[in-house]
Image (cartoon, rainbow, N blue to C red; front, side):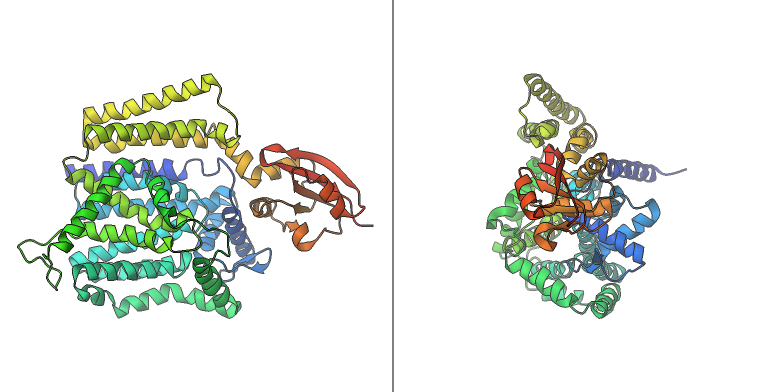
Length: 542
């Protein structure tokens, strides 16, 4: 028979698997690919799969060198298993997120026994982790191996087993294949900062392990060499243009103020911010106290008796360095600081289990209010996306639902204590996500995905007509490229096609289309008001 410890472990793992299955996998295809990156990466992977080419990423036959190859490899494998679907392109990120959550669970089980389920569930249910776990993008596919690498490094640092140091280097190699040099760069910065904080440079020097470098290069280097041989401009385009220029300039039009990542971080850790904020504040205070007290000798140990607890400073550095680093970048996107969210979840779980004031009445009320607000936000999202005012009956329903779920959180935690906090919090999270993936999904699809645009074109009889765009954002271009599996031309780039085609234009563009068509017959086919688009049939050139 299984021991009580084994049964508890099995039960906890079952809970984790069920939570990850819902938060990361449920309804992956509820709405189509959104933004520019998702459909673009999905189409590149399809082209590579069709060519049986595992080296050169291409979009419509032209090399696309913005990102490394891991996101395409993962999507190709998913396509081979499930077929080419939009949701299949999202599966790899969901798998990586699940692996990250399990790694956090086993790490905490070893170093903070009793808090492992809290840490794993806090990480799994954080807004940024849920969001990027459900996206066909590079962010989670870099974050997961990088974060597990940092957990492996700490495990080696504490126990000395070189297998964990080997895992650290191998996982950084995977991170290098996911998003380039940022994974090893962050690892170097965090470990160096930690060694400096400990006043023990030997920590950093011991981490520089030549078999580890060989392992890192064995994982990452073959593809970089192969793609440079196939596409000689790769080094210039990827490293200089899409790494250095992206950081130093606003070439890609993602400029934000220096403080941008402070609210992004706070939103990313929702709904746990009430506990994460004091956890971070406490970590800053404890680090400042240790550093200013003169208790640390040059070898990193305390002068008076027992050593300070060093996991908290390590986690704090792991959080602060990515946020601080990208605050200096001229180009800022929310996903850049995703690697800071898992250590924040770990720090939050540790705080909940070690602080007597962690679950005060005020914090519980504020946490419940945030959980209720989260549900309210999900319920009103379809109305806000359509820019419609809420009818009074809907406002009342939203208020009642949010209040009931907020009160439920309070009652569950007051009755069951700290051990029920993560389960109480999961209730509103699941309700909010479930609503967005079912009743609200069609609205998201209609407003943000080119899947709905393609469906409308097919309903208008334009299933086989070439498509050209006029005054339309690139998200529509890349989305139609994937859903129609054909190149999409643009009037402002290739000019007006000489053959008959369907022009997809911004609302109010009919006169512009007629001017561009230069005397060719133009027929209005219909419009798609939710995305402010109009469709025209343009005859062939005379």
